[in-house]
Image (cartoon, chains in turn blue, brown):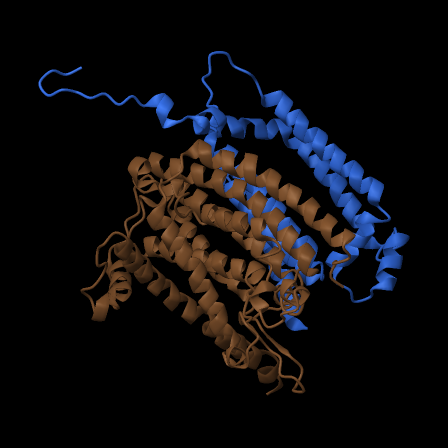
Length: 204
Length: 360
């Protein structure tokens, strides 16, 4: 179908150009917004491959949560743009090396030196069992049966990361007055209000 | 001719159906503002709008025309592109979510194959809705940042924190619903509320409103509705635009049509969230009683009626409740709703499994 091909090239072109803009735009807020555009187009590509569950999760997790926090932080920071430019030349070699390594990996994959495109192991079995099934259900079945331990391990890693973040940033300060909600709601009017009969012309 | 049949005709058809959905929604939004002013007026013993047209019925149209014809002012320090894109984002996101909302289901016994009355019948409809509603925060953050104004920025930051917090519990509540329904497709979720449930258990299958998820998942229904109020920045959680301290929050610098787009987006979001509540908990387009003359009324009318009921509660909440303090809002979201809904996922899954009520 022509439309599919056109949609693919549109998504891919916008994805790549937005990716370039993430790196080259001067304003970090613009970078994050272009990153969000990238995520969207990647989600579009996922939908075109029939992986609608992955696409939605990408949008929910990365665009709906992670990128909001990025944007939050970038907007709050007082970034010095000229200083930011100076670091560019210093980190360029490392960036180039990583880029070239990724490029070589992609070329190796695309050139067919390593056979891809055939699922093996439990994945193949799951596909054979449900050739046209909803991929949400298939992913769920695989994750909670064959890859259960790996799935749990990933969960543990995230839990440790979360606890680590809390431990690193949480600090107790002295002299901070905190609210005790239980105490506030348990207050009665009889304990906190005193009704005084004030005589006219005398005051208290 | 082949080109026409393959491409042009489907495009015309889909544009027609999009208009069929969008035009009533925009009209509904216009009269939602009217209804809000009238109802709050009645609560406060005022008349509300009553000058333009009969009973003030033309007021929303007059307001719209006024906003259209005013001058668009862009502050000099603003980031012009993002400033203009922000209200568009809010508006477009509120609109595209309607693609997956099911309005009805034509199921004639002995007739042709049942037809789902929905624009895009996708397998992951509920995830799509969740994804779109989680994006709503961008319009607000972008507006607050691009306005280059401290009030707008403070409003945007509050809003971002608030929406992200309440989304978490909304997500968990959706999981409890889809555990009970056994599908991510919104039409399937509504159909799951049709033919089994409490009404069938107590032996009175005519009382179909007892089958809807609002009874078995009642605590979740309440938490969901309160979270929806927070998610749409409505009273009593309208801190992002708290006029007493932030003037009007993230949209202070906006005027004329770009302001109107924010306004449209917010109200359409209210209708959308009500539609979501209706689909998840109140049986979508299903009639409340299985009686022939109620079944004869088409599904979209039931759907609109239920949505209107939810919106009425939105408006009454605004009329009745004072605004929350910010720390109370965060406490409610993170310390009460999140643990409760997390526990509910485990509890609902456990009950479904141990009683053998798992769908399919």
